[in-house]
Amino acid sequence: MAIEGIPSEMLAVQVVEFNQPYKIHKVPTPPALKEYEILLKTVVASLCHTDFMVLEGKFPTQLPCTASHEGTGIVKAVGSKVNNFKVGDRVMSGVPKNACGKCYNCTGPNDWHQYCPNLEGHIGVFTNGAFAEYHVVDSRTSCHIPDQVSFASAAPLACAGCTIYRALMVSSVKGGEWLAIVGAGGGLGHLGIQFAQAKGINVVAIDARDEALALCKEVGAKHIFDARDGQEKVVERVQALTDGLGVHAAINVSDHPTAADTACAVTRMHGTMVQAAQPDRVSVAFQELVFRDIRIKGTLIAGQDYSQQMLNDAAKHNIKVETNLFYGLDAVPKMLELAHSGKMQGKAVCVVDQAEFERDTATV
Image (cartoon, rainbow, N blue to C red; front, side, top):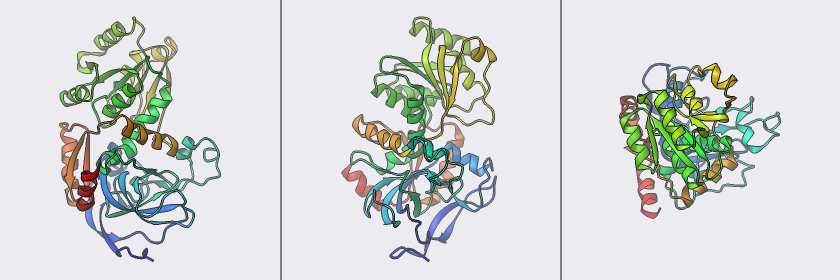
């Protein structure tokens, strides 16, 4: 049964077959909401590396599945137990959806809930996502968008922002200390530079594409190194900045086979490397672990607390999200072309509701 006041059909961009193009077509709008769910009229949704993984069948996704787990929108309806959102609120979509509330992870800290093994799924990966005129999210993982943050800026933050922000928290680097970001000129990395520097952390930005290195400079990185110069030279340059020790911690957001090893190599002994990228295998020389005592921590996205804190910091420090705007769900295939070209700076973002987007842009 459709939700009252909502059309029975909507346009959506779906994975209907792995390793095949998206299908853009009409599908039924979401049915009645579960108790903690909210229905959003999608305003903006963006593309993430994980979307390619879904297309390639890297996850056991049940098809068809509407793509994109980076969404923003306006609340149009709420479930019976939702008390933190109301109709009309501006929302950044939560990615995890409908955790069980009973397992070891759900009864631990809020930031663990995303690891619930009994989740219904992550939107755009295991359940329908934001590349649609409407999408359903969990009120317990979604966040209020501050007035100073636009829908277009908030959409990439739903995954990229939450992921790099939690990685920064997991790194435990403090103001005045040193942090390296490998893959610093990508969608996650350019946000990490800004969040870290806003906290008074000294950032070393490492990447291997001209466009990426240019973006690092554009968002204010002061120490930028080209990984194409070779690991040995990069390590030497980092150590020259850090009294010969290396950074206190490194975050790896690059899938390149050598990236994790580079992140460990630039880190000082007993330091921490946080792995946020998701290659098939993470490869690190044993010397980094055994002889230098580098500790590796994995991280996923973020719970509601960190996510809201991240959005508030984005508003407070005027965090710049580099976006490539496309208009209409029909333009999603062009977003993929740009992402595959290797020439993209930042994030590819789809304006789903242009009228609402223009109203929002005029007021933020």
